[in-house]
Image 1 (cartoon, one colour):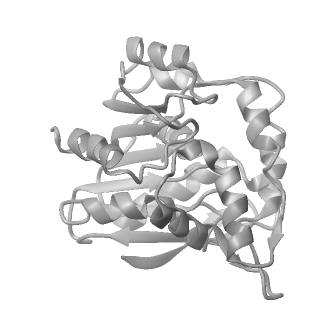
Image 2 (cartoon, rainbow, N blue to C red):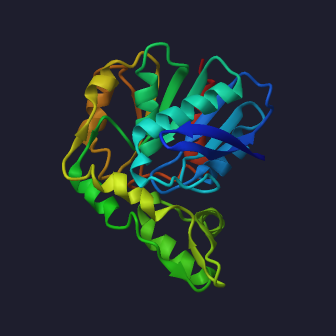
Length: 281
């Protein structure tokens, strides 16, 4: 795995976008994996490691997360910025087409990019997200977004993450240690803090007062779609998932028991579903 960086032009100047790249950089089979709201590209390390022998896998940190630069104007943490960043990244990667895996926010970005004329997205995998998002679920997420807790040690940080990410369906101690490693960074005072800019909450909180829907973008999709859903999800409701199989690109739906929003995609059986669908040309 290589860590790389790309300067991207935003509304208020350039910012540095970090990304992880796995596999052969000359491989034309490229899977671009984009994480959720407060997460980072390291979420996909287990999946990428599994696919790297046959796929080139690229996992960016969206601005304000992980190793990417924080934006000085917090209202720039919004979908138009993310669309532009991902378009710049695809151009940097030097490919004509990509397959896209997006968790939550990463899926929203993927839907909007794939719906555009001339889109380079060939196939789309959505992890627990769809074109209708209920306000109740958004408000639940919003309770924690923007908080900036500091932890005295790894044990305290891990306890916080295990509560905050209880719906991810993570069971193995090794997976929790990985989440701890990628989700925290030194706070400069001997402790740890979360690995994202609390300022990204500004744009998010402006959008959680009501339901969000973008069925028009969904209906414009022409590429094959695989939808993954946590059975207990309050973000991708069962009725929304069913409607996604009946209209627009008529997605294939796979549900994972024992988790809600959003499946961590670290378990072998979850990775196997993705790998099989990608390899079914």
